[in-house]
Length: 192
Image (cartoon, rainbow, N blue to C red; front, side, top):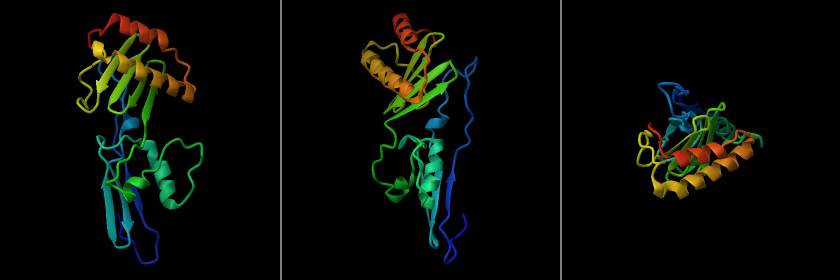
């Protein structure tokens, strides 16, 4: 990033990660989370000094689409109402403050997968199989240990499923998930 010359506008550079999306098939079974990955770095020049904030995925859930409202915010341009994503500028302005950027992150891939992440938990549903996966992202960030077969997790599964249904409605997603969800829970945790 170039230094700010006297009388010029500050430079803001959001740098996003290179993300390779996973798609359903033999090798890639989980819905990818490119929408859940934060930009790697947000840098802002301040006069002759530089401010650089690196966002860690365990610290904040945000979206690559947050780059648009962040850029608009820094440029002093109002973010249009139809933009559903949020500016990351508050994180640069107060990097040590606790931020709950999103209460939930919803994801969909064709008619094959739906996903919701709330707090530390991620629920994935494969309606055609039917199959449900549950991950504790705090303890298992690589999503290797499915918890959906644990009886003690049933209330959590139902709570996350309710949140997923609310997001489906909000997004106009009409894919039927009730029957596949019930069926997946009745059959238990199939081999993974």
